[in-house]
Amino acid sequence: MEKMENYSFIIKPATEKHLKYAETITEEMAESAKARGTGIAKRSPEYIKTKMQEGKAVIALTKDGEWAGFCYIEAWGHGKFVANSGLIVAPKFRKFGLATQIKSEIFKLSQTKYPDSKIFGLTTGPAVMKINSELGYVPVSYGDLTDDEEFWKGCNSCINVEILKSKNRSNCLCTAMLYDPAKKTKKQELALRKDFKKNIKLFERWTRLKKYVLLNIKKTKNKTLNLF
Image (tube, rainbow, N blue to C red; front, side):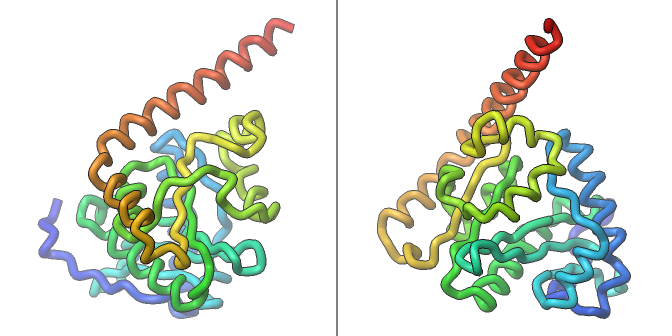
């Protein structure tokens, strides 16, 4: 693997000039989800192209024009909530801190386009949880997220959707995190953020335990159904 200093990334809002990367991006999203053994709402190349054309996406390229990473914005509940979705980094460019840079840029773009919106995310990865924490997100319950049905329909293509349904949409393998601009200066919010950073290892263990418990509940339920 090449050393990090041998790479120079250009991270900026995606435009129509980047439509040619859409299929590669969606293919890598699907492969990444498969490798992790976790779910992800599937997106088509056409959907990714639309986000680029709307100016609601960030793309990372090498100085030679090779695709390196991507993330896009989705608005829900008439713009009251915003999600930074589909974060993906090309395999050869992982471990270089590129995901953190992309998340930072899409976060800034979200604040520019939706300054009063709450920004949220659902993730199974402790690494993404850590990045979100550094940006000001805190862990919340699913009830604190948007109730927009169109958002939750996106989970239907996730392999873990049955767990979500069995919990009446109150829990799943993903951890919910939220950034509320109205609370960004409150001491309580800052304390929660500091606590999350301090105990990132604890959250990693909690994420693994959550996955173990919920997946075993699913297996037990399936075994019971097979008896009838």
